[in-house]
Structures are given as structure tokens and as C-alpha cells.
Image (cartoon, rainbow, N blue to C red):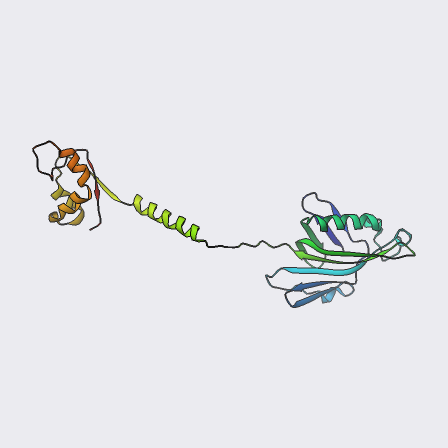
Length: 222
């Protein structure tokens, strides 16, 4: 079993050379302990809330890095390991926590890292807590946004307006018959296009309801 902490951006990896007795996982008020001594008791929790992972451990000094409990392949001087973990904590680096054989493989940030320097063999005890990186989406409703939405709806409605391009045989009566199934509603179309029709008929000895080929008339709702 190994505990790997890897920086997502650079790929730099720190592997814990001396395993702690256990890692605690907390989800809300629920605790789950992964016991490294008895792997048969490892249980994976469920839930979608942000989790924290924490443990107390030892960064072994140089004089004891050959002991059976220490994985010498991954051993670093305590000061070097502390420098890496402190940098990740202070700069809020996105990391991946992997604990082999348990299924833990999460993106995390270091929430706290507290080393304690001891005399004698140069080892350093420490406590560390990592919090799962979660993506939070916040929806904010503002009056300005509502107005923008209303404007957009109005624009959409405007686009849906009906228009009719006048052909050679068209009259206001025939157009009203086509769209309203009732020719007598021709004045409704005239009123909706009065300015355009009156301008075209100005100075001409024709009925004020006369329309001309090529005119684009707005057809209001019945």
C-alpha cells in the first residue's frame, strides 16, 4: 500500500515513506477509517458532500530511513518533504490523493499541515488534512438579468411577426380573408400599416385602402 500526493499542474509527486496507522475520511458528520493494518476492514463510503482526509504521521529522519517501517525508495529528508507540503498548502495547489488498495483517488487541496520538530533521530511528526476539490455552481438571479431576459423574449416575439408581400391580385380584403378567414377584417391590416399605405397613396386619386405590388404588410394577430 502507498499514499501518493501528486501536484496536478506539474506532476510532482510526494509518496509517504512511513505509512500512518490510519487515514480518516470525514463526510459531514460521518467518519470512515481506513485501517492499514487490517485491509479486510476497509470500506468505501458513499455520498456527494465534500470529503476531508486526514492522518497523523512521521517523516522519518536520516538515521532511521532503513528501518522496515520506512519505504526507503520514497524517503526524503524531512525538511524537503515539509517544504513541498508547505508550498502546496500556501499556494493552494490542486493535488491528487491516491491511496492504493483502498480506492481513494481524489482531487484535493491541503487544508492544514502542521509539522512538529523533535530531537534525537531527526524525525518530524505531523498532522495533515486534505479537502476534496469540488466544483460549486452558484445561480444568482438579478433584476438586471430579468430585464435582459424579458428583452430577449420580446425580441424573439418580434421575429415571429407575420408579414405579407403584396402580389398583383391582392387587396386588403383578400389578404384578410387569407389570414383571418374573414375579409371584413381588412381594416385591421390597414390600421397596422396605415402610415406606409397612406404615404404610398398620397397625391393619388385612389381609395385610401389601395395597396401596391411589392409592399410588405404587417399582419397583426386577430
